[in-house]
Amino acid sequence: ATHYMGMIDQTTLGHQFLLKELGVVPKVGWQIDPFGHSATQGGLLTSSVGFDALYFGRIHYVDLQNRQEMAECEGLWKSAPDN
Image 1 (spheres, rainbow, N blue to C red):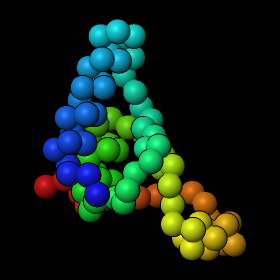
Image 2 (image 1 turned 90 degrees about the horizontal axis):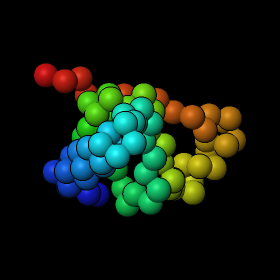
Image 3 (image 1 turned 60 degrees about the horizontal axis):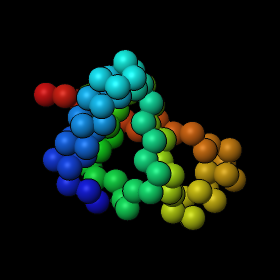
Image 4 (image 1 turned 120 degrees about the horizontal axis):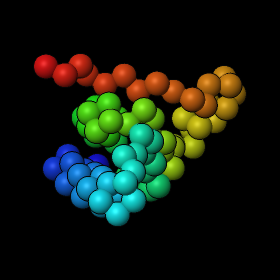
């Protein structure tokens, strides 16, 4: 899993670029090819950066099969509350 400082740095840089160049503040994130998700990722890359949603581009095939069979392909990642 990616170290959280790298996630913060890259997200900050991207948000600054989008605001400066396009006047846009993103509300949705998309991780094209993550290699695992750290315990803090749900909190860092959702409401803490202003996202309303975060989409992942990779899921374990067994998890995907179970979600498809149960018709539950959407999920709500409940991260730990901010202290």
